[in-house]
Amino acid sequence: MAHIVSTRPLIDEGLSGVRDDHTLTVCDPPDGSTRSVDDLIALTDGADVLLSVLADPITEELFAARPELQMVAQYAVGVDNIDLDAAAAHDVAVTHTPDVLTDATADQAWALLLAAARRVPAADRYVREGRFERWETTLLMGTELSRKTLGIVGMGRIGTAVARRALGFGMEVVYHNRTRANPTVERQVNARYVGLDELLKTSDVVSLHCPHNEDSHHLLDAAAFANMKASALLVNTARGPVVDEAALVDALANGEIAGAGLDVFEEEPDVHPGLVEQERVVLAPHLGSATTGTRTRMAQMCVASITALLEGADHVPHRLV
Ligand code: GLV
Ligand code: GLV
Image (cartoon, rainbow, N blue to C red; front, top):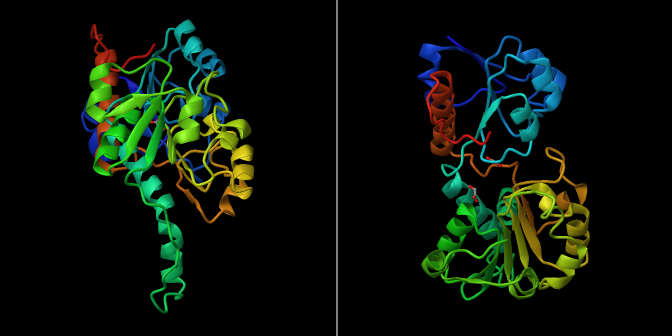
């Protein structure tokens, strides 16, 4: 019987199975705040497995302090918070939850895209504030999407799912990726491969779906915004630091681009105050995978990986280290 520690409450249904066979300690941070490495070291006293989320810093210090830890099961597809080299050096397995959140995240990109294009939050505030007194010809006008160009940066699973949805909206799709997608995928979603410069210059909406790494850090900076259409919208459901947030605030304030839909931020949970001031910016607190179905499947995937590892299976699903 192993001891599993989850740093947060997860959807209960997803965890059945692990509860029967092992001890599961579910922690609940009192103020929901980000945990420090010291907090995590304290939580993992006697733990064999740690169930972690993106906000948990999983570092060399933690592995060194807890040599009995066998595994980190990350409740996310991204593992930016985990030092994978340190995990490997300490012989700790790391798993994550790819694929199951692809459609939910693509939906969220489209929710933000549509909300920014049609000013949904501003319209909602307008009605709630009791300001809807008559129909007006030019009230809260937005941007139409059909026949416009959607530029997708990062054509992995999520980028492809976003492109597929664009077919239904009658948008042209261009994309940029480190390597060109295979021709079948390009044909299926009717997407054309272009350089980043061309994508920025020609897109009416730029949607980010690349991971954050050294190459993509501040990929969208002041020069990139200067390249974009003044009428363009930016959607980011990928990772905050792919965008230079201060440069985005300037670009919005100077009318270099028209608006944005943002699910992720450079210094989560902090949001640049300049973004909050902009009416054409729609903000969400990192909700890409936040549907009941997806979050349940993510928990089930963590459990499947944990069970396989603890049972000594040859193949541990979704293992990165
Ligand atoms: C969410 O951002 C994830 O990586 O799962
Ligand atoms: C993540 O699931 C991606 O590959 O886009």
